[in-house]
Amino acid sequence: MPEKLPLLHPPPVDLVGYFAGALSPAKELEIEIHFASCERCAEDGRRVRLLHSAFAGWTAKSHGAARRAAVLAKALRDSAETGANEQWRDRLERWVDRWAGQAEGAVRVVLRKSEEGCHVLTEGLNTLLRPGGMWQFALEAGPAGPRRRGPGVATRAVAVPPDGPPARVEVLGTSVVEVAVSGTPEAPGPLVLLVDSNGSRPALVAEMAQSAEGQGFIARFENVPEGQYLVVLEPRAESPT
Ligand SMILES: [Zn+2]
Image (tube, rainbow, N blue to C red; front, side):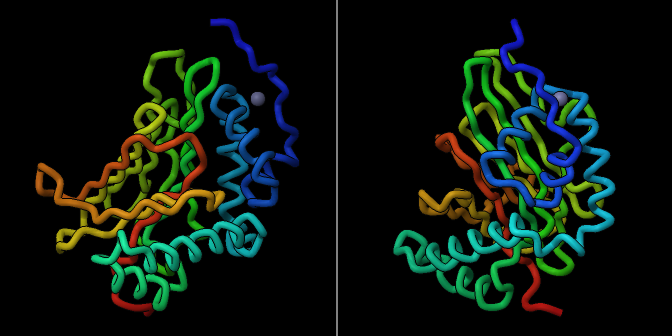
């Protein structure tokens, strides 16, 4: 298949800006799309990310992180007030009150179709975690990271925590997002929110159900429109320690 995207590799300053959350949403998306088609920059990105994590505390107040925290806090409040989520109102309100909108795990998901096929990208958002948050997601290492496939071929992207209890956020094709966790056997399963990053659609809320194997919980969102989302998991602890 002919390569249609010109290989304009982003300059190092943009890679650094990307992981510091200092770029505009449009620029951020441009870089993620480039990562999906350029293994060289994806590898550079992984190196910058390692360096960046050493300074994570320092950059936590960068505007990208602050903007996402605000989007999440608003989505939680709105979801608690929506009649459709009546059954989970208490839990959503507790999530807002006790955790100030922080999550047990958070992953950014981009669903986007293009002429070349479909792009599906995910990245862990550890700045949204509660202190002690269980699931620090990262893109699955190696060639299973961000990637692009031809038309008609389902794209699959997976984020898993390299340490800590098993979990995964998986994107199947361009419209299905599946979240699975284990290591938290007590029912009920955590709530999971699929939050539109731009706030233009109400968040989808689901309570994760016991998986068929009975070793954890699973939730699946289908027919998800193209867009950028935060996948966030309900805190499992009662209150901050
Ligand atoms: Zn490149």
